[in-house]
Length: 238
Image (cartoon, rainbow, N blue to C red; front, side):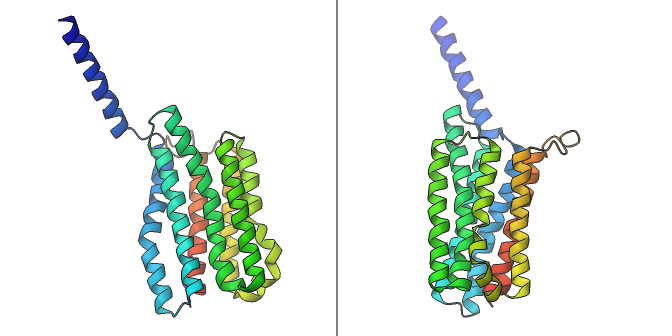
């Protein structure tokens, strides 16, 4: 009788754990914001690639666009997973590593079409090698020290994002005014988002349960992605 009772209790506890895993979202606001970004990236990938093909884009342009959209899918997918699932301390740490590592992928992925389409030549190839090299180093860094202070992460992300100043004259010469301004706007959105992430401003916490500083950081990241998508769709594909 005692064995049956113990078995029943263990079975009930197992069901409770399964129910918690299935229905509990760890960070609802953060998960929701980047799930929207993930869906948008998935849906707009074929739209961008078909548009580029219709405009007569060459192979390098198509490769650049594909890498850019894939990097967005990976970033927003990893972020959604990390903020959604609360499995175990070990699993959560792995998801956090993946989330942070994919930020480097998005930064390098955003550079890729610009380097392959706008800069081309030796300047574009050198810049592309630099940013992907930095992305690999950054991912290794996060693999080893994902719990580093947020300001350290932000400084690294922002510094990598503005490596483009090394090729600023070529960018200005190769882009139209509108394309350059959208590209700049995207960089500024990412930068402000990084500052918000680092400083942990206590905004909205008193008014909105699921929308605070980190969710605002997510919104700025999505705005940066949108600006860069506009550059790809409107200017680089035409």
